[in-house]
Length: 462
Ligand SMILES: [Zn+2]
Image (cartoon, rainbow, N blue to C red; front, side):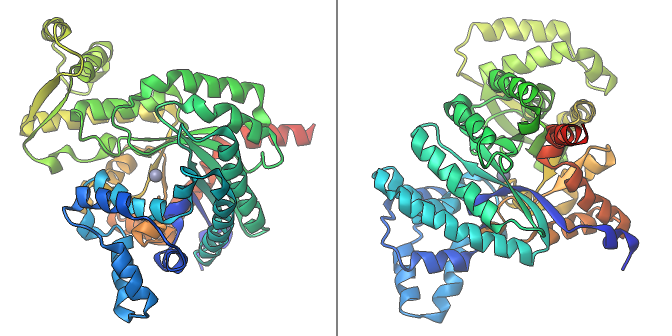
């Protein structure tokens, strides 16, 4: 065994969504016991796939013991290579977990809370056992709260997850929790998160996350929340929270330039770790000549950025025509903000996007933000077919701090080791470099990046 491996304490997994960790067979065992109204799930599936899932008929076959039905269920559950392409399809598959869980009853009946708590305890235990089998010694889970969730119910859910995690933790494994706050109003549950971070499970709460549809939610709109979090961390260094931010994962609604800008913006606003950041490093040539559009507002924001960063962009080889941009801005001001502006991409413009990425990558590197790369998730949600186009190559080439995560190992049918192996293989890393990648995750844990660990050590050494 190489020296590096002897010293490795196990794997640290930093990018996980709790329900996305559930394995298909565990969920099937749960579903065959339940009666579920599948209408909303079937509608979303049909919308994304153009055909129904017919899940109830499939479950009936499973209940009758049809052996083929179990693998048919795995296929329905897993978001595989053949599903690749867009976030809507992913969401349609994830909806099986949402609609099949007791969560969905919470919208109709507060009394369902007890069954949700039992469900979380059950899956929490199964997930931890799975992680132990994978050799994971440290894991940060994210758990999404919707803005309309009543405060008491949100508190009960987060407490249930934290309790399950505390129970499953041990000398060999540490589990941490980052509530995912609703992008439309992160303040909705912010007070509750602060309260929990100071409460009996406070050690478990180490970060907050932003996930789910990013379209329509520019990072700069979250600046007030970023400031509130910074203020919290200054006042409570021993309960500091890391800011985890999914960005540049899905960007069908905007120009490639704007998508790059969003990632830089999130990093410079103070996100500690960036989820995916595909737009920052993907080889733009993989999209080929094409057209895409964005809102007038988005284009105005991009013009603002180009003028503000003209010097750096020019140095990266991007020509910034200030007078032309000014004229375009004046013309755009006469239009509705929601109107669309169309952009055509030819080889030259795709090349220029690549130079913009170089500039933005340098800025992200200076910000200190760490990028979470989730290879299977990126390939399937981001539709990156050719491994050579994956952003991880350019992240490594430009010396950006990178950690590898599996995102939703259950729904992607993967493990953390497989994700790390993929990067090792595709980026041609040596065994020592692979080991460095594993160690990078330990150094990028939320409690390290937020300063919490250092604050605790300072106190103890006094
Ligand atoms: Zn994620």
